[in-house]
Image 1 (spheres, one colour):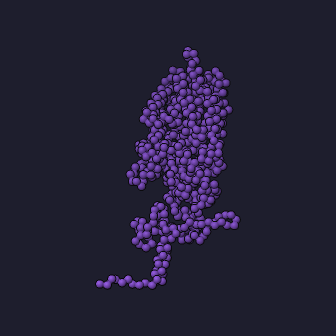
Image 2 (cartoon, helix red, strand yellow):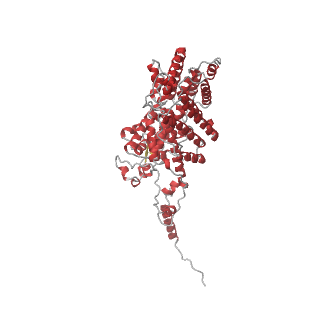
Image 3 (tube, helix red, strand yellow):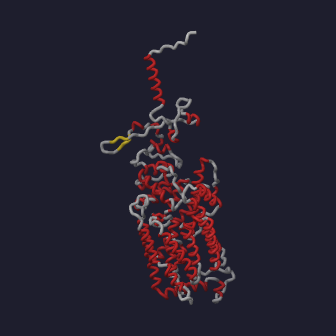
Length: 609
């Protein structure tokens, strides 16, 4: 049998066929051969069995769209860089983007179409303010407030915010969060982060705070939107609210935050085991804990009012899941911190309900409840040893002592004063041992605790002691442990010693000036009370005595006052009103605390000359 003969092919035809195959190959595989889906996943784009679709898009039954090359910039004669229009196809831009004034539908998911409407491929672009304004849906008159938010500014603020999360670990940026993703997917959170971290630029911070309030009202009040972006942005804005708000308007925003958390269903969010949703579930758990921490802590310690967000068992489960995940270095302390705030809130509710139901509110009852809460905090410290090294635990213990002293209708006992003085000394020593920049970066609840301790320091330093036969050792012990002038000067000097010019750890000069005014006002108040001498102490003792004698019906009856038949036994008679009727001024610092530390009227009255 003859061997098979190979047909002869002309050499020119062979070269022509190879050139056609090469041209078709180049046509099928352009310079950027990956499609948009594979490029987003950063996976290799392999041609599939169907022409025009890669293997992945064919398997997923979706359109396979080629990647659009980035617009190249050309240097013009005037030095400005302009994008070359030859690399951008008109079909790649949505039709509504070509219409003037057209806005996309309000959505807080990843907006690839929105990104293609703006030039986000270069760091010197000025389109980020326009992108944020468009995503937030704010008016044209407010867009000028965002003109500082270019690419480099947002990137620097995101890096600086990662340094602040140690003071408020209830919101954490994702490790792979980029400027483009944050501006398109989380616009309000981006504005809130830039506002918080712009303390080194007061003018910019004031403009961004105003822009945030306009965007919040436009999205939540006007359009009625609810999303995690709005919730987390408001939570971040409130967490450092004292840095850029001259007039504190926090309590009404806390109710908005609690209502938004309820609308999103975070209080009943079940834990999902799907691997794709674990990150989303942990983010929702962290946001729910942040809402409770701010609503409960600020309402009780900042305003002395009921919390707009009540405790649910899901809060403990959220804290346990975050502690197990350990996605943030401070997650191990979240369980103890949340239980700490819950204990303080339970005490406040117990005392408030007793007052509303007209039960006997004798100081012994308040003393019993306060000591029970103190034992509860000690049990928490044994259960969570890492809680003892935090400033929050020491501040909560001092808050209980302050609450007990406020309820005292007679001269405070020397033992209580000395215990409080020891706790104040430990707290201030711990604070002075930490870096100076800490006082500039404290979250609002820690800042409120610091102000409460300063007021407690001023009251303890000038509190009248009972006359005993112990030789006055109590007065000497208090004087040796507490030197209020030195402590206040040391706190201000420590805050002023923070480094200047650090872009990632900026100082807050406005907050430093305000803190200096508070320290000077407290020192002047202490000097006035000391200069009053026995007369001032006598007025305090007379006011205390008036409250003790006329405060409870059973004791008032001994002075000849009869209880009406329709009046419940144990109703208090306000000691300050009785003192004023007798011509006395009941200006004790414990009584002035009733309005709350974040109430502007409190500081106006307390620091008044």
